[in-house]
Image 1 (tube, one colour):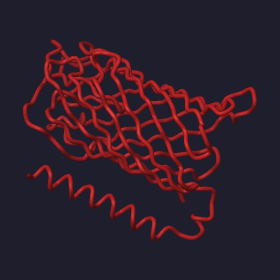
Image 2 (image 1 turned 180 degrees about the vertical axis):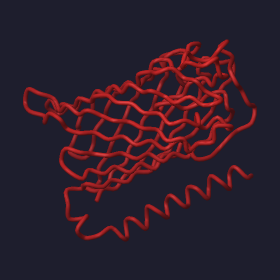
Image 3 (image 1 turned 30 degrees about the vertical axis):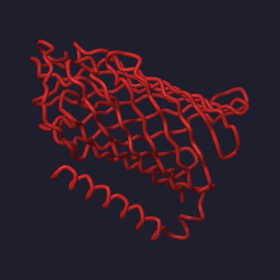
Length: 280
C-alpha cells in the first residue's frame, strides 16, 4: 500500500507541474520556434536479464527538451521507477544484472555473483542530462552531425537497487538524415560510470538506431534497435528491437508508443511504452 500511495503522489506532482508550466509559459517563449518540449511516458519491461530471477519493472519518465538555439539542445530526464525485485540496475538507460562489488579498478564485479532481493522497490531514479550540438547541418548529400555529451546524477536510492549511487559521464555522436518519406537516426555514446560501495561497472557503449516512415504529415511508423555493451564482466550485452508509432494531432502536441523484443540474454524479454508530449 505504501508503494501505491508513493507512486500516485509522484504522478500527481508531475502532472500538476506540467499543468502549471503550460498555464504560466510566457508569451515571448510561446512565440519562438517551439524551443521547449515536455513529455510524460509510461514504460514496462519483463525479463530475467541473464539471471535466474524474472524482473517486472515500469518507468515513468518526465522529459524536458530545450533548444535555446537552432544548433544547441538539452534533454533532462527525471524518471520514477518500480521494479519487482532488485536483481537488476539501470545504467545508460539499459538494465543490467546487479552484481556485488569487486576488488576495484573498474574491472567488474569480483566473482560475478548476482545480488537479488525478493521485495519490490519504487522511487526516484537517476536523473540524466544530455546536450547536443549540430556541428554539421543536414544537406541533400550530408547527414546532420551532432556531438553529444551525457551525464547521469546519483539521485536514485543505491540500497534499493534503483541506481548505482555514483555520477556517470560520457560523450558520443549522432547522425540524422531524411531520405524521401523516411527519417533515419543513429547514435553511439561511450559512458564512463562512477564506482560506489555497491557497484564497480566497466566503461561501456550505449547505442541506438531508427528509421521512421512518415505515412502522412501527422502519422509515422518506425523500427529501431537499442543496446549497450556489457557493463559488468559476467553479464551479457543488451540489445532489443522496437516497433514505434507517433501521431501529431496538432503542431504543438503529439503522442505515441512502442513495443520491444529482447534480442540478447542481457535484455528484457518484452517491453513497451506510451508517451504524450507538448511543445511551446
